Image 1: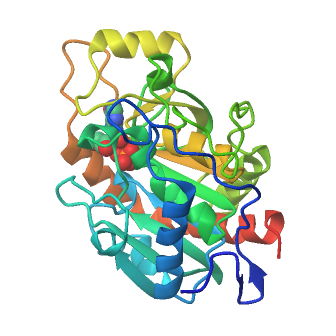
Image 2 (image 1 turned 180 degrees about the horizontal axis):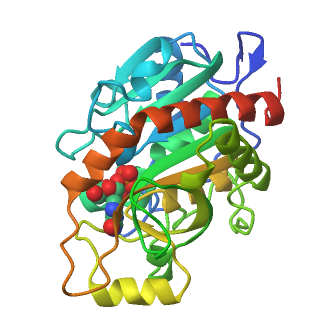
Length: 324
Ligand SMILES: O=P(O)(O)O[C@H]1O[C@H](CO)[C@@H](O)[C@H]1O
Ligand code: HPA
């Protein structure tokens, strides 16, 4: 098998800068934060052997972007596609959420080589956070420079409407407050530093481009910018929890993305994220209850717009911000 740092299609894939740290043993004899760098290199090498696409942008398709259905989804519109089901990928988790498709799709969007995750991994499925984020590190090893993470979220900001698209400006890592972080455990400097900064997690230039693209597509009236938070799920929030989150400045609530973004920034990927507002957060005891079917219905309703939006973003990000 070709080594990962071979010059592939004239482009240098990711080159490790340091030797491996010794594995730190925990009480039960397993590495504390999951798979080693070398193990993930094996996964990346396997994937490189399954496709000639050398992706520069990675897209995580959330519940509002066709992780539950195929027809018309973003992943389906990828050209020259090579699909690899998660269960075929060494060391990869498999999606346990009913209806999730669970595959990596390599191909081209607006001429740009991409890899899309159709179906992500959630903490509530039983995976530790490092495992939910394992695909992000694999993307890095494949040569991906930019991550676009999409999610479905409840709108907490009272001015948001169902079907709005929120550009994520920042996040609050609620699970991190309780010490649960994908970077918890020994750090391997070949991925990134022990103490990564997070104040520029969501690239300003990308957020500006996204607002430009919203104007071009004439959807600026439904595009917002705000703060996302992730809770562990799987239950939707109580009224008291939502009132608390509102007070601390959260605009949209979900159960994903934050840990993926932390992992991507740790290994110095550029990050853009968006939330499709699929429901209003229920901040009164009299209102109807939140439900997953509504989340999926709104995703389907908005999929054409989201597809156009994300495809244009891929094109602009590649043209304006990624090395040739
Ligand atoms: O964040 P994504 O995967 O888009 O999905 C969101 O929608 C689901 C709840 O309806 C949860 O999985 C939540 O995280
Ligand atoms: O209201 C919500 N809360 C948490 N996660 C979600 N994902 C979609 N909607 C929601």
